[in-house]
Structures are given as C-alpha cells and as structure tokens.
Image (cartoon, rainbow, N blue to C red; front, side, top):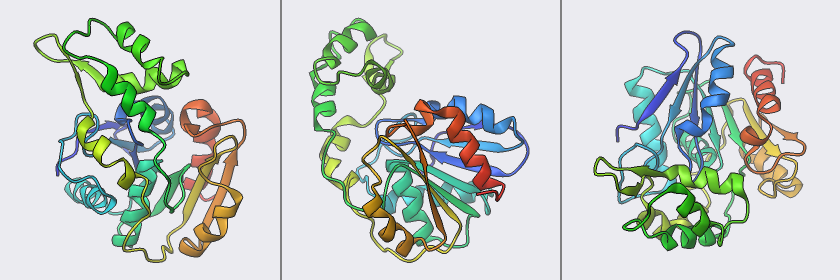
Length: 258
C-alpha cells in the first residue's frame, strides 16, 4: 500500500514518525519542524485507514508493518530512526520484530507490547452521532462530540478527521466503519514476536496509564536494549502536551546521550 506522507527537512539522517489511532501526519508537524531544524529529514506517515492514506479491509499490525516496509523501501530508507505513538508504537514494534536490521533505532511513545481492552467505544459513538448529511460546521460537530468527550483539546484533535469534499459536504478521513469493527484488534497484543536487539527508547507520560512500572520487565525481556523514560506531568499525548521536553528526550536518544 502506498501511504500518504509529508516530509519536513531536506537533508540529514531520516526519522520516520507514525501517529496513533484517530491521528494523522499533521498531528506531528510542530514537533517535526523543531526536529528538522536540528539537521534531520522527518517523514510523517499516515497509516492505512487514517489521514490521506488509502482505506483497506484489513487493519492489523502485521499489515501496517508491511505498509511501513513498503514505504521505507520505496524511499530508500535503510537506516531510519522509527518513531511511533500509541497504535503507531505498536506498528513500529511489530515492524522491528518482522524486519530486523532494516532500521537504526526505535522510539515507542506511550504504549507497551501488550493487550489493551477496548476503551475508545465512547469516541466511536460520538463520531456516529454526528449526522454528516446535515452537518453545517465544525462547531456543530463539536457540540455533538462534547456529549461523548469532555476535553476540548481531545475533541479538537478528533475532529481533525473531518474534511469538506469538493461538493462542500463533510466527510471522515478515517475509515470509521472499519475502525469501529477492528477496535478490539487495535488493542490486541503483537504477533510473530521475537526479541528486538536494536537500541529502543520507550517514552511514557507520567500521568498516563498506558505504560506502568509492572510493564517494564516484559518490555525489557522483549527489547533487552530498551530504556524506559518518563516525561512527568504528561498524559498519553506526550508529544503534544510537553513538546519541548519530548523533542529534547528524543534528540538525546538519537544522538546517543540517552
């Protein structure tokens, strides 16, 4: 599958970033501009069924890892640093297990290699409550979503999935029916698991429940050269809540200081 991507920076080592569930490449533009100014080429990729990438009937981590393999091959990126947040973090972990030796370092943001129970059902209900055939504005969509998600910043993030078609109607960029059907699988554990010996950094938010202290032994068993670092006062969207601290920690790892 040919994935949509944005590139920030023209020269330097390559960093490839994959977003999480309900996200897209433009969620990472601010971070990537800062990273590119430090001398890197940053590739922001829309995963399948998200953003401007194609929709597909399958949405599992092996398929998404294969998408990433095709992207890296097409762009002759044989030693890129791979970064993934949440669902994207599971994608890069699965990729590392399937294709060792095809990247230089791995960065996993606020997700562990384990099963997570379904916890986005209320967001899906909110999406489905928005009648696209009569929707007039994003503000109207926000009023509907506020009944399902109390946080305004989270709603603003989620509603980036809305866009206007050439005919002026609103539509979803995400493949909503497919994602609703595959919610359980998105939280699933990884398959074809093998030990990853590449240098790996797990960045977690201090206020996020996604990576607990109890998860660290299993992480280090599967990723024996892993470092688990915490950004305090950050939740699950670490890179958005604490962007300066996130980029600083990422760069310390990239340059070998961490």
